[in-house]
Image (cartoon, rainbow, N blue to C red; front, top):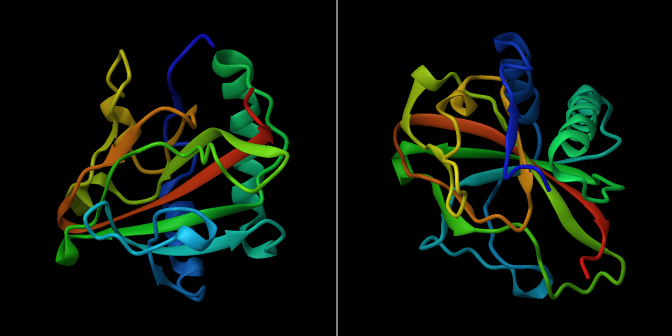
Length: 190
């Protein structure tokens, strides 16, 4: 690995970001969960947000999957060099000040999963909200040697990092922050 994280500043424009948020409103919404499979629970001490799942193959969001793959391949070639083979779904998250939306320190790899073949290898965040429309909610790489750049907060920016890196979304104190999280999987770590 040649880096802890990288980003593509304002890859999506304002209109594209607003379209994603608007189009996703028809998808079922739920309180965000923590855990995996039968152990998933709502844990407001760790995570407070609303989420919507977007599946691969949903034609309304194909351009989002295409952009994620395009940028993931570039980021992976330039910085990470992990084996990624699939992206089955993405998650649109809403962090609102009314419930101090946040997601405390965590990593994205489920080391002890029931999947015999795959682990999450490369995580991505797309910043959908205009940073002037909310306060707080900063994305932080907890254990990174180099703090993540403030430009990652720019609307339409894609950030990539290895899924085992600890990170968090700080509480939103005013307004609403929308983002997409994506997890590229590959053969299990060994």
